[in-house]
Length: 357
Image 1 (tube, rainbow, N blue to C red):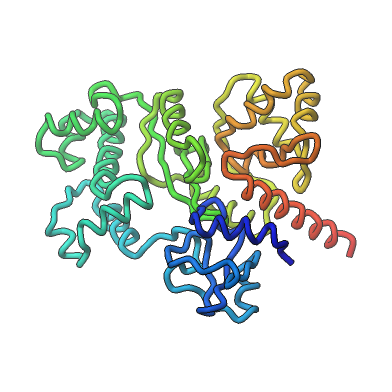
Image 2 (image 1 turned 60 degrees about the vertical axis):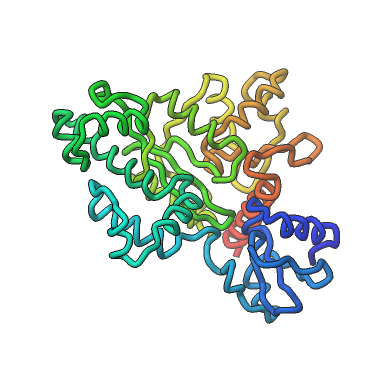
């Protein structure tokens, strides 16, 4: 039974369309008989006409039907048919330079493509396609191809236009990019909302909720620290972590195996290593972490290192709480932190039960 206090918190999140409450609750609207996710764009019902549930299954069992606008049975912000079609078209011919007639041939409105890509990836479709072409150019240059060959392979006829576009996206002129690291970024849908993953061909560098506070600065710092270009794409580590996250949220995985690339100061890395030693389904206080790394006076520094973690869930900073039991902070949102802790505790108890039976 959800307390009245928590119901009012959920209602406020519903009114504000808070994306950090995705997967935390669903709301059934008594006057319409439908149930929605927190970010539903429909007109908001009165508080007394709302019934709150922890899962979509509970809403269905209470005889509510899924809303056709926010589609609560799909992943939050799941990819639209327009975005899916265009991404497939880009992958089929990534060197292509898109024109209005290309959209018409696919029966897609160019402004719709721009809007949906902006919402999904934080960039317009033209910017997405251009970044993909630049990724191809970088691959050609790093393999030893002449700049002119890379220019033509990426669909640019003008050398000056190619240099300008390349420098704008990659942050360096093509002639200086032979040894620049390329990182790929992908959108990963999860039960608690979309996440962004960034990796090279071997290791995962970053995993964060898309609406994390300061995400743009996090990505910028990663790019500057690694001196890398970040372009849309897919890699084995990104495919691996998506598969593992699905299993984690389904309750069938408690330890991640995707190879990680952890960037941080020696102190930060010491803290993060200790976080990974916190048993699944348990929590530790900042004070306990400080004592574990033989720095009992560095509680605040531990908290700062905790907040600098760029691999959410995998390096479980959500398992660190205050000594008095308060959740303290979490860049992904306190409601997500609470959900993750409760989810792991529940799975841990189920695993213990299976061993005793």
